[in-house]
Length: 169
Image 1 (tube, rainbow, N blue to C red):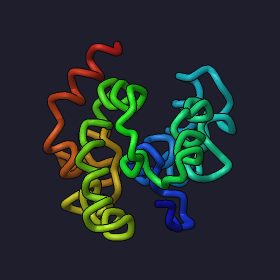
Image 2 (image 1 turned 30 degrees about the horizontal axis):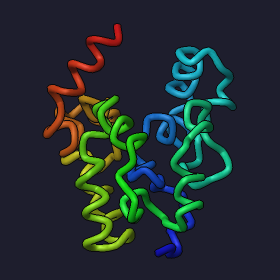
Image 3 (image 1 turned 180 degrees about the vertical axis):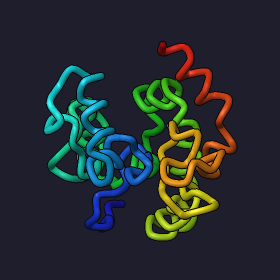
């Protein structure tokens, strides 16, 4: 059943946490990182900017998202609420990159405690234990104080993240 989601646009339909997204962090806090990402994707910094998956301003690689339209069609806020899910698109999506490892657990948790509490838990999960900075899954060391691992997520999934990054080079 469709509910009202936080206006900050900080959680995606697919279950990812926008505040820990590299593009979101770069847009809001790190212009140098945004410029680097734009060069990597071969686009302008404006095309790389993202205000969150539920906003009108999406990074270029998120504009073709199939999950938003599908969720609207099924009248749900999250893919995890869909009575027909998980679909093959979401299953494939979950396996492609290490920042999606916890997707199934996140959908389950949203159903158990609601979006607001889940959001608070994710803030803690991606926060540096030393300084509190929110880091992405790909920030192996905290982007502010250099503590390793940068957050609980990286502590749990660091090997998968390192392997993915190594294979992309």
